[in-house]
Length: 81
Image 1 (cartoon, rainbow, N blue to C red):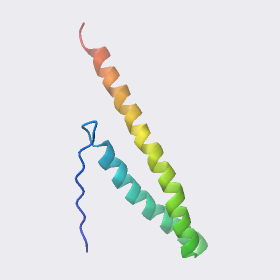
Image 2 (spheres, rainbow, N blue to C red):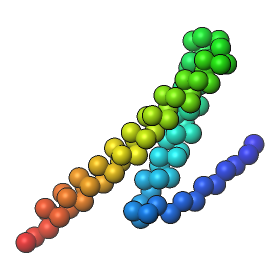
Image 3 (spheres, rainbow, N blue to C red):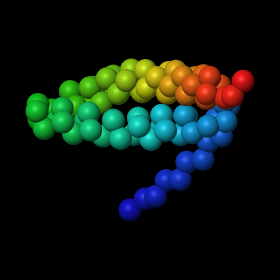
């Protein structure tokens, strides 16, 4: 078994980039497995595993950034003022 340890310091100082990368790896595996099981084709499984998760991973990254901003704004609004 190969263990890969990834350390990335995000430019925004949080775990968004690392979360995005681990999500991508998980998603690629799931997409390939399901597509291969449904079609029996390595080619189609590989193509779907590259296209759909890539787009979904980019969307996930920005989704995380939006939620971080929402959480930050909520924290500011809750401060006694």
